[in-house]
Image (cartoon, rainbow, N blue to C red; front, side):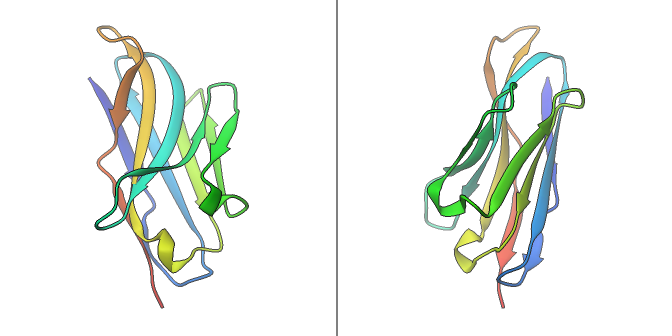
Length: 120
C-alpha cells in the first residue's frame, strides 16, 4: 500500500507565498516522477509542476517563474514553493507519484489534496 500525505495548504493574500510538501510512504521500491496537480471548482484537474527522479522539472505556463518544485529522493518527498500567488491559483492541490511497489510497476498514486486559497 502506498500513502501520499500532503501538508502546507492554507489561506494567503495575493502576492504571498505558501510551501506545499508531500511525503510518499509504503511498500515502495522506486519512485519515478513526482508532481503537483490542482483542481479549481468547476474545472478539470491540471498539472502544475513535475520533477523526474533525476531532477528534470516541468511547469505549467501560468506558474512559470513563480513556483518551484523540488524533491528529496532519500526521503521520498516533493515540495512546491509557491510565490507571488494570485487569485487564480486558488484550488485543491494534489500530490502525485509514479512508483514501483511489490505488486505494481509504475503505478500512479495520489494524495488526498490540500486546499490553497488566495484571497484579499
